[in-house]
Length: 333
Image (tube, rainbow, N blue to C red; front, side, top):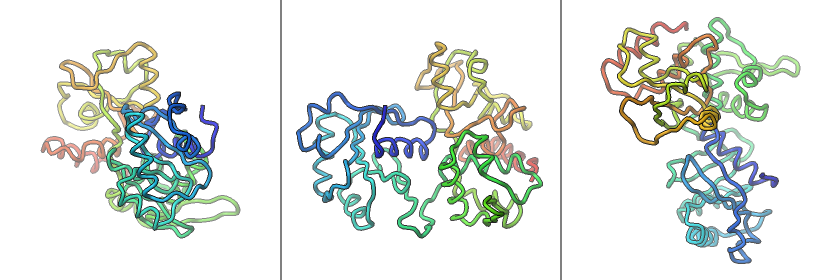
C-alpha cells in the first residue's frame, strides 16, 4: 500500500507512460538494513518494472541534494539491494536535470520527466508553465484517446474527449494530460463552451492520422506465449497481429495465432491457471500485452485497425506491408 504522496505519484506516472501495470513495487523490508542517512533521505520501494527487479528511491520532502550525492546514493542502493535504481524527485530545475544526466543517474519527476536509459526509457514532458513540445512519442493514454476518436467519430469535427477517456477507463487527471498533449502537438484546436472544453479538428481525419504517425508507438508492450487456447474465453482477448490482418484483409492465416489483451487481463488469466512462457513456443499462441485497451470496437473480435497498423508497421514482409496499405485504404476516414 503506497500511502505517501511522492511514491504514489511516481508509480501512477510510470504506469501511465509505460502502460498498464508495468510497475509493481512495495515498501522494502530490507530498507532497515540501509544506513541511517539513506533511510532518512529516501522512501525505498522494491519490486518489478516490466518483470525486471527494480529499486525506486523517493526523496523525502524537498531536501537539497547535489547530483554527485545522488549518484553516490544510487551506487550504494544498487549494491545493497542488487537491482537498478531510479531516484524519484518531487521537482527538478533544468540545471539539476543536466547534472543528473551527466552523472548517469536514472530519475523520474512525476508528470514531468523520466530518464532511465538503462531501461530504454527517456521521456520529457514539460518544465514550468509554458507548454513545450519536447516529447517525441505520445503517452499510451493520449494515443488511445486519439485512436478512439478516429475509430468512433467518422463524421465528427468537434468532440468532448473527457467522455471518451471515461469510456476507456482513464481518470479525469489522465484525460487532462492527454488533451494537453494533443494541443501541444497542434493536432486539434481548443473550443470552450461555457465550462466544457472540446477539441476541434484542424483539417481532415486522414491528415490528422498522417500528422500523428511520427508520434505514435506500437501498442504492444511485450509478447508472451501459451499453449492454452482458452485464453480467448477467459480474458475476452482480441485477434491481433497477422491473425487480425487475416480477418481484415486477403492475407492468409498465420501458422501461429496472435491475440492481444491488457496487463490486467494477463493477471486475470494467470489467476485462472493459464501459464505463460517468455519465449516463443512451437504450436503455441502469441499473446501480446498492450499498453492500452485493444478492444476499442466492442462488436469486433479483432483489435482496431489503426492500432493493428501501428503494431505491424515495422514488419518488412512485403505481404504484411501490402495488407497494411489495404487497411488504410479501407478505413472510413
